[in-house]
Length: 323
Image 1 (tube, rainbow, N blue to C red):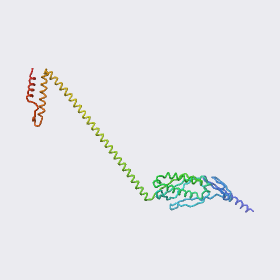
Image 2 (image 1 turned 90 degrees about the vertical axis):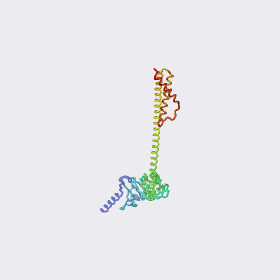
Image 3 (image 1 turned 135 degrees about the vertical axis):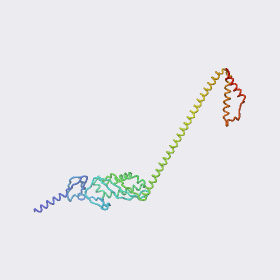
């Protein structure tokens, strides 16, 4: 009787201990009663009825890196559902662009379970389902773009992919926060062609910049030459004007001096007729002086009469010997 009582107590303790569940923070446990959903246990110390109630196991795809550095995936059943944001690194996959170029893409997906019940009962293996959905959606999006658009439209692909996945996984109780394309790697020959194209584009830009520099230099040089020519012409013009003004002033001064000299001659001679004879004789002498400045001081032609000159000279002599 005593042994039976002890065994009964031990069995009761084991039964009670088996019904105790400690749920960690940010985790939940789906509880079924006789195979039917009963409740969702949140964090803390919880109790279920053993045998009648049991936690629902969830198939979860887990990826780990092996010793060789490669990633290996396997299915693991667990009774705890993590509500924290999860990061899923998808294996690299090959997709074909609109212009039939095969490229390799590696993506990251950030998602969070917001409805544990739907995540358990609406889909069999949530991580694998999200992976396959992401891969097929990514193929469709990239298939609508050519290679150049794919390389420069990474942000656009991320936004569209996140929107499609978030809408598709809503019934699974999942919220897709963001999607990031890590690498977009085209084939080796395409990479080589792109590098050559980039080099040619850089050379073209350098040639354009050099040509623009030479053009600006030639324009500046031409403008400098034009301004120099204008300045030189203006300087020559100003010099000619000053020279002409100086010559005019000199002529005026000379005329004033000649005028003063004539006035004094008239005053000295007293009679206008005598002064006229004197001036005419002086002009004859000046002309004769200019004529004799020819080559070898030979007078070739004299356009006036020698007797006139002599009479003029005689008249000057008489004027000078007059009292």
